[in-house]
Length: 504
Image 1 (tube, helix red, strand yellow):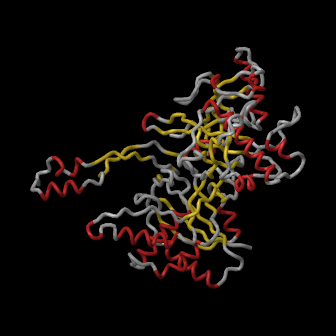
Image 2: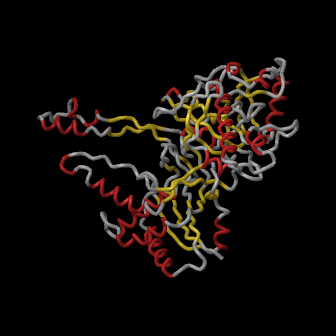
Image 3: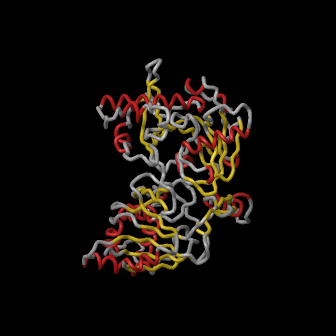
């Protein structure tokens, strides 16, 4: 029966200040954070401030293990506050003092060289414990036991996890299956996933330890010969999708950037032409499948790619083409809706067979082509799961609003009660339970600053000629849902796309 190497981290405060690579609050703290804390603890324990040779074999072994399970207490973002911090202008102070200005006036006063830094910590119950669980082979080889003993000893020297003020007390031990079962009842279990999930965490790789040693060496030499050399950020790690066992599965998708064909910049499309971007993506994928003879049978290209079907077959598996307007952060003014620079192709959650692995390999480098002019409009390039804009469409939230309007499955004749009834019908068609809704709001004006009116969006002829009602919609759910979310009669072709509204 497999056992686990368990690192237990006790927080001495009820706040965590760490941020992810997108400068967003990070919870749970990534396995890379624990690994970095262990490297620092090994150096401090052995008094090897520049060398950690005694711990290198154990740390390298830990970095080579599969991603760990994480058991974390429930947490939420706390209210933000501001700190007054130095703005790294002490060279101006030194020059003023060198000129003889020792009375603290002008540049000579260090107190004038400060700036405000916004801090938004994550809050959890007092004296909470966090657990990282690496599965061990069964049986555990003697060589591995030597590494484990070194790591158990090193863990006791950890002092912080996150910022320097995130003080902790840590320990490590081997847990057998019975002990693990009891432990899993004490928090939220986050498991690594193969498919995209609502959260991606940084995990150490086989190159991480050497990269950390090299980065520390660069830090010590950053002022050599009187020249300041910036220390490059750490880039040697893996991004691994994680999901809580209580979370609904993420709708599977493949995401792409839209690049300008002849120029090294993003291709840009108006938000109102989301349907055109979806149509070009669908046409490119159909041509690619035909050219490469990828056809699993049962008229796959016609039904799965183009979405052609008989009446009543709405729940049949198919691709959905969802162009993503940019969510642009503009400081204190909040988030604005920008042009389309990304697109994702999604499948239904309950699709029996996924064709996304083929799509992820085949689509990069392909062109979106205008069918009238036959000109290349954009080239598809892979999009990382940690992309900030993509996360506004895929991460969990309880408040969502349309970036492209919902086409109701019928005309409401200006009657709100009828509009609500039609929307709930569309909700059920997309696989969501109306009982999960806490609040619903319709309007013609976008809920996003910079967003166009609902009627300005281009719709396919079959939707426009039917005179079905079109609205921007804001939803509040009783419990947070993960995206991508697309609702309404045009949900497979670029309409009815929602983005998170609580993305401050």
